[in-house]
Amino acid sequence: MLSSSDAIAAVSIVNFDEQPQLFSIIFGEGIVNDAVAIILFNSVLTRTSTGAKLTWDTPFEIGIDFTKLLIYSTIIGILGGMIISYILKKF
Image (cartoon, rainbow, N blue to C red; front, side, top):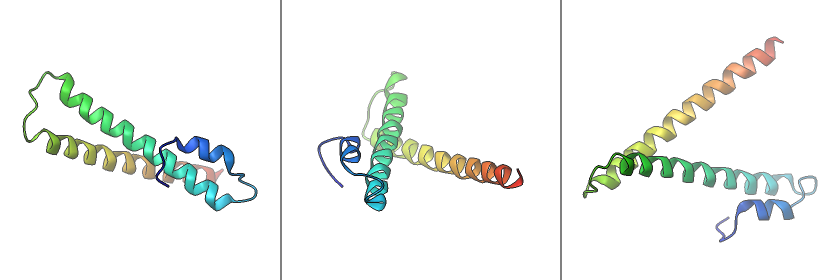
């Protein structure tokens, strides 16, 4: 799935009705790439916008911020999905 173009270009070529699994894989890969890029950007922006000097441990701090954002986002997504599915189940 590694390519130099955006995954949306590949998704536009694949027809969901003919190959739903391939479509889902390509679409999911594009979403994950975008999410990782946004999380990394926010982590780096947080470190550089405060005016703090970049030292040897800055990559580790960015990695820790990235991991925390990833875990918190996953927890929020799972809890939100469970709450919505429970509400829809009751209605």
